[in-house]
Image (cartoon, rainbow, N blue to C red; front, side, top):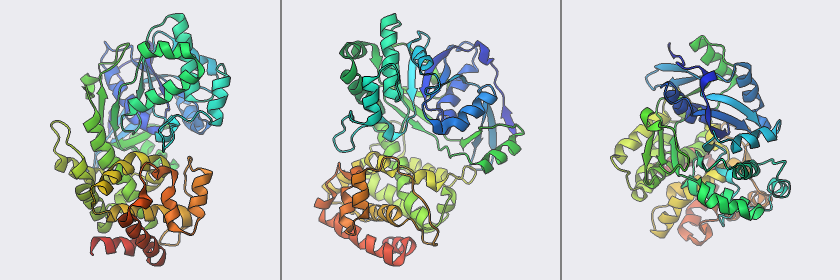
Length: 479
């Protein structure tokens, strides 16, 4: 086992980044890059102060604190090779509901020059239909009225920036690391909307003191189960309470717009550019959309690991045809990128048995994923009168997954959709399948107005209910 140890002392590192969300992806991606840079001894002012606002992170917090915030990251190649990195880039860890004033003070600190975020697609609190920030959310309303006791990331950042402004500690960059098209613009919309509603003076200060670069992040990082922890620790020989594992592929492309300076991440593989749009579009439309496409039929066919699902020739063909026929016409290749090669690498990454990503992770929170990964391409396909077969099948499978909660093998399950609205529940319970097309996640496109989409979708709804997902999928591929 190849173990790569830290070559720096955490005690000598200064936190220059404050990051909200210390889950597995952050620890496999941004913290990994930070760790690589800290290995170079002249870059010791770019450690990470991690912040958690969620009680669901309690086990991660407890585990990190028990081992001085160090953890192991096992990087798994498809050929079975594994490298274990000892990561010490998270040099401080704060918990918002334990000590909110400590988080606020840290944001205000002059040493913090970047606030980064992995708060999930739904965490930006934007209406899926209008794109506007939802001000009447209960927690948002609380934070607007009680700035000194924030509960949300928006309340914490606003109060921290207010203190920063008053102390004269200069500007700061807010860097989204979530899978969103133009995630910097999304973050800017969300934080600016909140702060404009709370404090016009701070909003004016932000306009010249805060930047929101767009970025594209990529690294498949599964959730870590108790069995994974035992396996990872046995392989590494290190008893780690909160180990992480991931694939060996990694990419981070960032718009170079940092008002208070930035780490020299380009020394460790990060790509800086003036415009990340092409990279974002390629990744979201091909990788993330394909993950969503394969997740629900794979789960309903009884698969629980992505690599196992990709051994199913029908699933593999379904994904390949989706990428080639549905998505590729709408994806301009970024500079120096071969789309054919990129798609082949995606198939190989999905099939990586050393990572064995969970299908349930891909199914999680579809309501936040469809608007970002699926609807933009579908809108263009409907406009251009393209073949909507695979898209219609996906929507029928998603409805079946949510409505019946039993897979083709008879196994019952419980879905996880944290942003499901009461209106969505009514549409889901309706016995008219077309009502489901009014789901909040789909409102950016008038699906009911497309006769060809509705006709195909209805056929698949009936087919899946009568014959199951497996047989219905096969009928698509061999018609």
